[in-house]
Length: 246
Image (tube, rainbow, N blue to C red):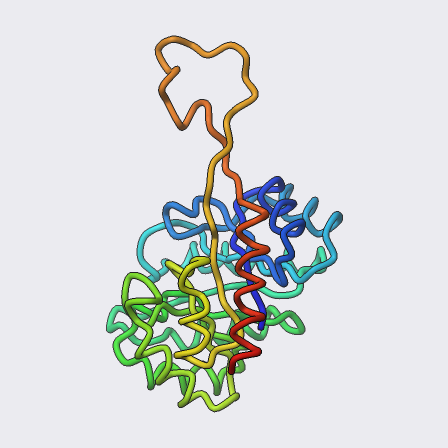
């Protein structure tokens, strides 16, 4: 059983490592679904942490239909990740029809090699999840991050279980979105998946002593992103329990 944590910066990555994360998905702007983080954060995280790091390659928030210029940015970001020794990248591209953008996805997978490739929750917006599953297997993706085409994985648990059965160990199906301490055992038991994704987003109080009166109630101004180390440890414990009960 493997637990991937989505982190937003160096400090949340450090906390995720301390908590026992098995792999990190590095991204900025998690509240907008995640976009590619800065080269500085990517480089420092690679220098300081030895566990697998998979940055998201997403040039903007919004949909997963990309202009030519945005696709060029994605290629440059993947080349940088390979240059600094990242273990993999996380991508997702769709056509206007809702089908997987096979040509561009294949290009990015080839460019990323030998790094691994996760196809992210663009999958949850695709037209036919079972057709997309077979296409991503053929393209050589390592795994699919999915909430079962629902807003959260607990809501999409039935489709996730069907995808896991259909995948038949040809690709990893990784539930994500709404995965929490209190539901990860049920997700593991009912889907038979062995990898899980969560952000466990939290906040810590700023150490600023001066707080401008106009902004003293502003969370944006005086709270920083954080992750509970204890919550990660508890999720790992629950995954271990689910494995023993399987």
